Image 1 (tube, rainbow, N blue to C red):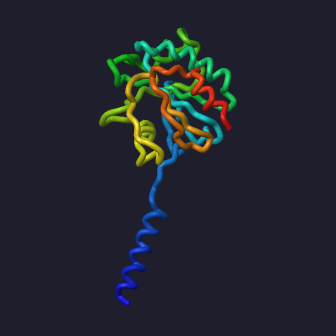
Image 2: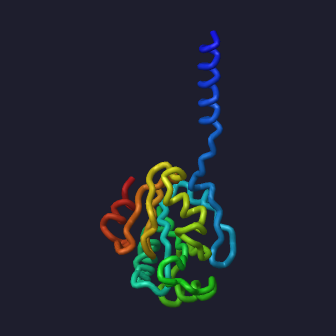
Image 3: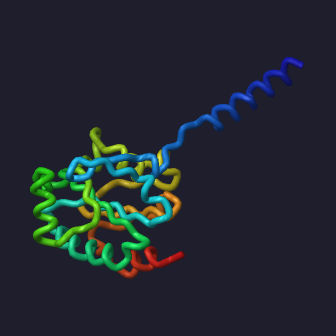
Length: 181
């Protein structure tokens, strides 16, 4: 009888901890734009999202052009979100105003740009912690290897994949993902 009670209690505790476990959803995040306004990821439900860590003084910086082209062409179903980061070679030293001016004047960027964050290390932003940790995103672990790495989020807020920084945002692989149902 005692063993039965312990077994039932154990099952109850396991079920209880599973039921009340807090899982962070992609849609739970709120961040600040370059202009300091709140941007709520819950507004992205039903859309595919590409998150890119950007930098103004990087060999990959010209990818802003392709990012903007993809955003303009597929913007009804895709949101591109840029997160300036200074983690690699101090290639994003600018202030929010300088970053906005650079992106607008040089590449005509209209997709949402967020405030500068850290994409790795001890001061990693919560969004990037979610993107890079299987424990948080439920799909995979990854590491941000350089500027312009792309994270793909599906219409249900699930991480779909990671695109290498050197691969352009208008590559066949990325376009196939954007246009897939």
